[in-house]
Image (cartoon, rainbow, N blue to C red; front, top):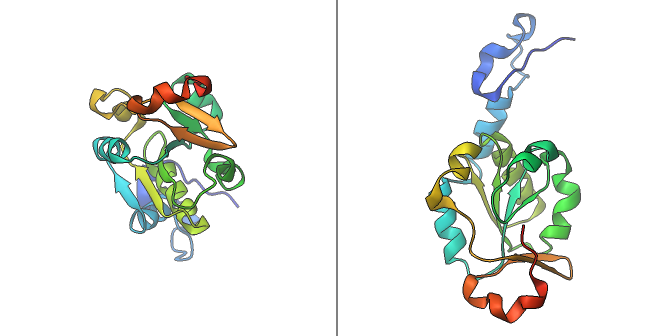
Length: 173
């Protein structure tokens, strides 16, 4: 069985011609489009506004593979690759009402990850559906409002105004 799926931006024409008439097969683009109809998709600017307005802990999950995240990452993001999300997310986000933003290189994996998190029971999940380079280099979308700290397995971002009280817990990323 040989299928050529290719990039999710390619739609249905990427399926090997022998299997193209099979209505049971869905492409990655189909799955992503379906996910995006059932999740909260936001731009980097919208995510930044929600992030800044939140008085609670907020977590930015980079669902790209570890190597990509090691090359370049958003300030204050934590890398949990999409393939390990269900296994590792509870350590970072132990509460269902944690404000969570997912992002990836192009928005597809972030969307699928946001859907997975919703299905797991998380209630405040947003997928940033812009390309990583657009998020990273858009100064208005900088997610730097404080420092991450880990206290009892709960990863939080503190507002700059609150940082002084937690000097012993600083961990700059």
